[in-house]
Image (cartoon, rainbow, N blue to C red; front, side, top):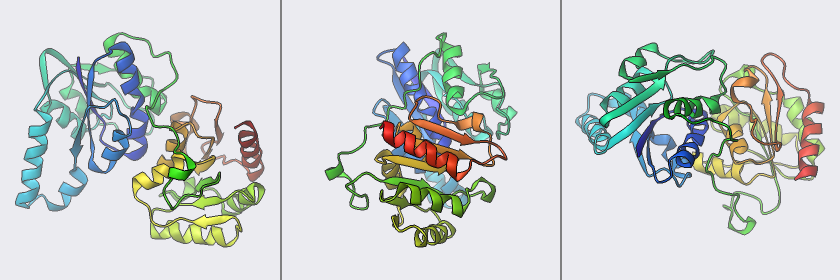
Amino acid sequence: MKILLVRVSSLGDVLHNLPMVADLLRRHPGATIDWVVEEGYVSLVRLNPNVRKIIPWSLRRWRKSLGKKETRAEIRAFFANLREDEYDVVFDTQGLLKTGIIMGAARVKKGGRKVGLANGSEGSGYEGISRIFHTDSIPLDPRTHAVARGRLVAGKALGYPVDTAPDFGLPAPQAADTRPDFLPREDYAVFFHGTARAAKKWSDANWIALAAALAPMPVLLPWGSPAERADAESLAAAMPNACVLPKLSMMDAVKVAQNAALAVGVDTGLTHIAAAFVRPTIEIYADSPKWKTEGNWSDRIVNLGDLGTPPSSDEVIAAARELLART
């Protein structure tokens, strides 16, 4: 069986789609699985060794230069690459017009199927027009967890139950002496404090109290924008055990999550990556619903707060101490 997955973005959504791969191979050993993904997330999908072929989709970059001959040539090359193989099943688990167009262009064998979402989840950017490209549209409860959505679509389409914990297919932590130079050799905590939406942030006072409670454990503070860097520097000035990391690539930031003895973060992609690696993780919800993305597949993941009710520093400190004592 040859299967194509279409899930192009964003970081957290691509991550949450990874368990489809293990599910499909568990039910169809020997299947080949290809994936269309935004070029910036190719390296994330590549961490899963069971994806055979990754087809980069570069719409974010192409939009800036659609009038250029080189861009048009890249787009033609993408569609040629997409159509090199015929598939038994194509899954679009994003439900957007752009992912529907990709699905529509993909080739299927005689009797092959193109399977997608019949509806979106609460608060999603689902675009109903994407259904015109489906042979099968799978309805889901609007409050289906982000990790479960793709798994359930495949299970319902191919007739198998989704009854195991999600397997993201990610590698184990690195040995301390093989870590990148920007990581400590000893156990460390990482605070994923940055987020694009201010309402999702946790207060500086809470982060500072947590760092003090963890001392002398080193605390790493990554950042992804000048504003987040300024926030990290402000926090580090009040945390004797904290270090502001240099500017990191996405995959170097993934390594920070992969190797952490403790990851604490707001509702953002890198926090969810730490949970997918099954590192001891505390996910903090302040302005987003916990049901959508909470790490619910391991007792090494603690989810605190909810929409409009962020947790206190005492709650997070208690959870951190329990996780560290246990692991």
